[in-house]
Image (cartoon, rainbow, N blue to C red; front, top):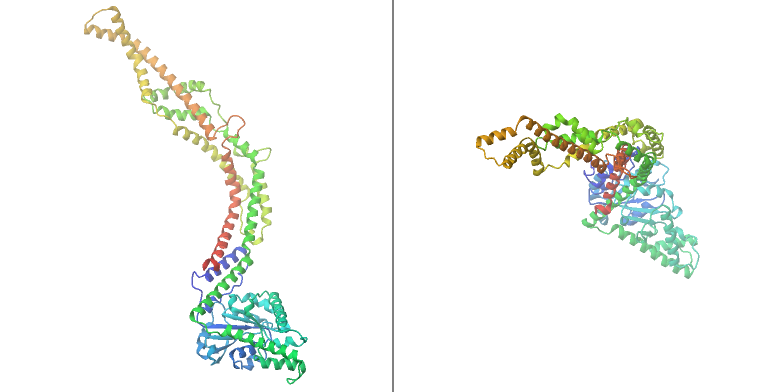
Length: 620
């Protein structure tokens, strides 16, 4: 059993057909699968299609130049199964071409001959396409998938037969492999008026033939259209047949003008047949046969692509999904408008820990970078916070209400707004074609509301941490002079200042004393009372310094809140934290509703792109 090789365009097309059928919840569309069957050999099989009594067998015998259509049991009462007129050396190749395959089995009756010019060309007589038996049309559809060329034979009595239009979509071939023959041209001359010119007659025949082909949507190039009488190929036979139809006898008498007209017409009919025979039976090299099969494969692929696009209408489906996304986004913007988002943003900016509370965490990290101060800060932090808060202007504590209260605006809770968005989305979804709508599963309004409230709680928890991190990231490290000043204060008041004062007093008295006396003088200057006073002064200075550092920490927190939008802004400007509220609404409401739609759209777009990549123009 032959199948398309893995990764071939036909294999990819079959996969896309299955996937699209699943997405659209409908049976896969019927595609043509004859490309691999036709590429098995170097035979050129030419199918002859027509309705009953159009003269298919007569045309086949005329093309062969001898009577090869002789199986009267199969042909006499109308062809009911494919009959292949094949050279006896090509029967094995024919049998392989029509062997059972994935494209379906069709029985083919071979009739062998020894015509040299038909060694690699098989003429296939197919069942009548206008048969009352429906299985005949099915047989034709399966058989033409295996042929390389198609000859449509038209009968002047029923040239625009709609049966041709029914089978035409199954015959996807390169235009160079499709031929149309208007047979029984002699019958069109029964009512021919005297004095008409052959040129005018051919013009009217071609116009009529062109209208017939357009009626069944079968456009064929002019050089692949033929008007002839297969039963009377030779000009003399054609003229004799027409004479008999005009006069009632082959020996009847015609006027000179009629004889001239008929002679020119008969020659033209014979030339038409010779042109058809040369087109169909001209020897083909292996390279030409390969190109013929390749072009037919490309035509089949293009027809299958057109069928898939028409059947599933990917562009229309994507347009519906884009419209649904726009409706959902509009509903979300309507319920969670700019005023709502700004109000919630301002509320979020005013809740959480106070500035002075956050400043304590900043202060704890800041004093670690100073000498001596950490030892003083922890036992004196209460005094430091009180005094520093006064210096900084304080900072009121902020309450943390429930998330549902923060999200309620103008008497409408977040839950009501989410339910409204969800209802509008469901209404828009009902306008989507049902197979596509079945693939979209949205979360409930309650789960969307819970997600939004959860994000608010998370926002409140993380906002103060973000402020603290920003403050700590910008803390300046005290310089050498600043750290030296702390040591100076600590040493100056209890030690250096008393010693300096005692030394100055001795100098002022002008008294010269020995080393022992000087030492006693210093000890006296550093008495217990003096040390206590000195350390007290140092402590007061360092405490004030701690208060200043805490006040600066409070101001740092306030500045970071303003810059990052994690605190109230001044004036009438919206707080920068508005972007956080936008993100909450988009990620917790709009995104869960949009994601299933976008996911389905991506699947359709991927398959549309794959179809585009398979087009013959792209794969050439």
